[in-house]
Amino acid sequence: MNELIIGAVTLIAGSGAGFTAAKILVEKKLKEKEVEYQKVLEKKEQYEKEAQEKAQYIIKEAEKDAKRLLEDAKKEAENLKQQQELIIEKELFKRKQELEKELRAQREELQNLEKTLISKEAQLEKRLARIEHKEEEIEKKSAELAKLEAEIKELQKQIEEKEKKLKLAEEQYMLELQRIASMTKEEAKAEILKKVEEEAKLEAAKIAKEIEEEARKNAEKEAKWQLVTAIQRLAPEVTTSYTVSVVDLPSNDIKGRIIGREGRNIRAFEMATGVDLIIDDTPDIVTISSFDPLRREIAKIALERLIADGRIHPGRIEEVVEKVKEEMDAHIRKLGEDTCLELGITDVHPELYYYIGKLNYRTSYTQNVLLHTKEVAYLAGMMAAMLGLDEKAARRGGLMHDIGKAVSHEVGGSHSKVGAEIAKRYGEPDVVINAILYHHNDEPARYPEAVLVAAADALSAARPGARREVLQSYINRLEKIEAIVNSFEHVEKSFAIQAGREVRVIVNAEKLTDDEAYLLTKEIAKRIEKEVEFPGQIKVVTIRESRFVELAK
Image (tube, rainbow, N blue to C red; front, side, top):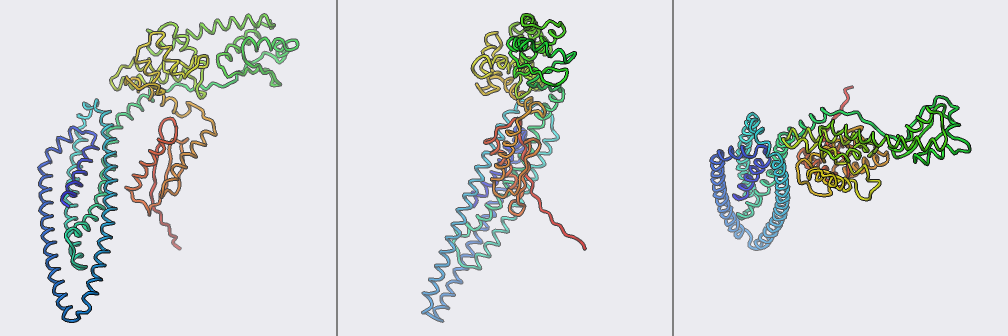
């Protein structure tokens, strides 16, 4: 019993230290409290010794009573002795089996709890490792450390209160055992151990929840502030590219000239540009249809020039289209150069200007890729500056991370690998190549700037309004999230809201405690992370409440 109590106290204290955001300073404070903890342990040993003495005294008294009862029984009726002893033995054996069964169950629960606490501690250690470079800022927060010290003192008070409760529980159980029958020392310990394990389990869950919440506040506060600041500083206009462009006509009569005799003009135009020209009954407009935004733009400019010139025939069409293509190449290079200058990146190979500018005529989930890469570059650069990393390298990696999409439909392979080959060919630094490959997990991150580029890419893609989503895939994801949540026991209802970025879980308040609901929330979040693919993050909110309604008539 002594080892169990010491283990429980050590487990609670160890969990508190492991979950504290300011680990180094709290350890210094804990060393100062070791003397007080030692006194508490000595008191526990004294209490246990007194309890053992009382137990031995009770056992001796019970044995004396049993002997007197046996002597009286012999005097009254010798023939009933064997029957009574048999009944007592059966009753004691049955009671022993029940106690052993309950003890095994409690031990299994305690082992599971210890595994959970070890897992939580490992997770917190990983989080602490990520924020060790912020030690200087943590040292400035002396007020928060004073609060943590007060919480440690409060935990000490709770431990002392638990010790008092344990002592009273031991006395009550000893009296109860004395009333029932004579028991061995091991059986008495087993009965007390059952109650201690139950209380330790609930208390450990409460303390783990409190410490984890405090650690999350301290650890994520700075990260959230930096992300929010970076996003607020960057608010580019969202441009969505569609599959059609419209050209206005000066009059409806020009449609016949565009079509030409027996349709030769429109066929020549479609062959030269690679688009579909739609001429219908809609007055004064012609529709250009193509999945390639670059072809669509070339066709639109060429058609507008042909209409303004008035000479529309196959030879003139080919001449104008070729000239527009040459001008578009120059425009794309200029666009790429302007983008690099806007981001403050001047030492780029001239050939890369064409690939960068061409991203303006590429889309990903209807999101303009050039605007997306600029957004990623700004976000990654701002986060790198806040964290004291190489801002220029982060911006460069953000600009180049989707460079492979400029040619991915022309060359086989994923756009990240194609982009890495382009970056190597034109002498981009290793940190940029690593960022291009890491943002789709084609290789591990070797630079912290690569991780920031991947985070900025996820933020830009997950931002509301950045991408349109196919309705059926959106509905399927919501249904899958709700199905996962509803598969858990004691979940009554679940609602996926905010476009699938949050799920509300309603549980039975009579069957789950607050601590059990907290553990259920963690399990649901882990299950969703494992089984559902989604951009950004999903917030899991568990609601446990009781409502009572009465009408006054």
